[in-house]
Image 1 (tube, one colour):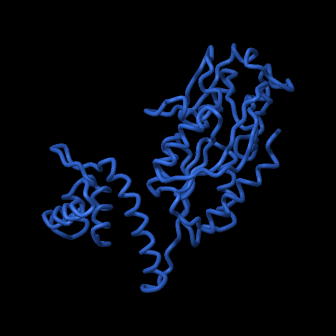
Image 2 (cartoon, one colour):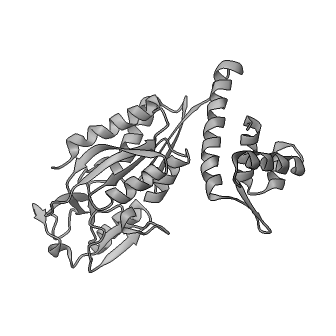
Length: 303
């Protein structure tokens, strides 16, 4: 296995075409095809699935691509620093479920480090994509939660994916709603009181299992339920339909505005918000700093 072969895999995956990748690499298509085939023989599986409709990554190929990108990126950093001696930006990426405080921590991180030396990426996305992004080296860190219901299933998925979970925040369950909601001024809200209002949740696409839900009490039989793809739409539904969602109770008015509040749900349920990372990876200094920023929100938990 050579660095050149890894670069070939990255190029083909990016173009979804041997012909286009060969043009960009300034080599012949037969030479590129031969190099990819030789690598597949060496690793013992097909990296790409070839058909009359084109070329796509196999399931193992997607995982291999993540490692290939990581190796090439690390080589480029070494080359820039010690051989070419050019200033190449370092990269930091984090994926997360829809947590405003996690985005806010990312904002603070960017302010501290600036963008002269770093390229930053933040992916606020579905649960399975958080896991896949960390597994495939797209992100160094993934932020999500565990509770008694999803813990066993997700922990197994983490282990099978070569990931580990570390806790950051322990939270009770809160009802997140607009400040003008009829229940907003109560000290505590019961599930029965919420029955006539639509519960709002984040759609998980093809992975709409209860175990992947971002909201606790995912198996509860809600009288009315609406799924949204993004946080802005969910907030609009809160205002327009007096909807609510269940959350950690951590309020970030700087990003969401001052029109919303969190009221304690009458429940013994708890959620543990934490991070996943690859078991074999050494956490970067900027990654450690990001987790420090997240941990500052312990003081804002309403328990």
